[in-house]
Image (cartoon, rainbow, N blue to C red; front, side, top):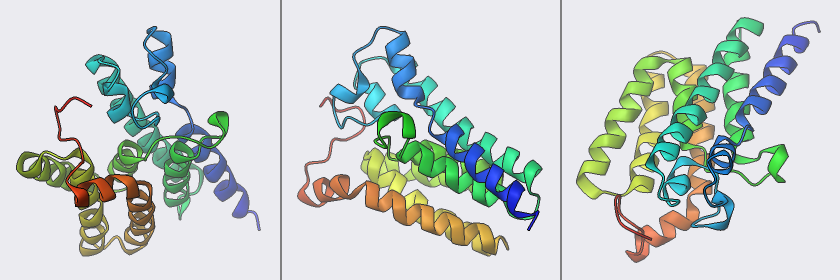
Length: 198
């Protein structure tokens, strides 16, 4: 019964960390347009880039990833058996459904990646390599993330990280669900390429 307390703390802390809307906070602090009023309306780095501020987009990407990593590390400290998985998943959900913004957040790619690095850094590197390779070939950010998210749980499973592979597989399924509009545009040939305006 006492083991439920560290798990619950990992869940709560992970969710609260994940729900920090760095994209919104950074753009608001810099006097940039409200990121929720442009593009997709999401708070992630891709939409922050649409404000024309590459520096803010890079900072958002880094901070959104770091909150996923921090959640995993805190969860591991609180509950060594499974706290890292609970907190990493909770941070990912927190980014997508932040309580502070009426549960309307980002799509979770950066936080997904940050959690991966916390759980198993070699898989985090594999995700980055796959993303970069796919981006170089097709020049679609969304497609690159979707492909990399499928490779991640496979890489974890092959590395003997069965529990992490299952959790990350669920996260990948949610990521695909969040990208359903992007997928529709990809199929229709209407998705914006990396570096393309609009």
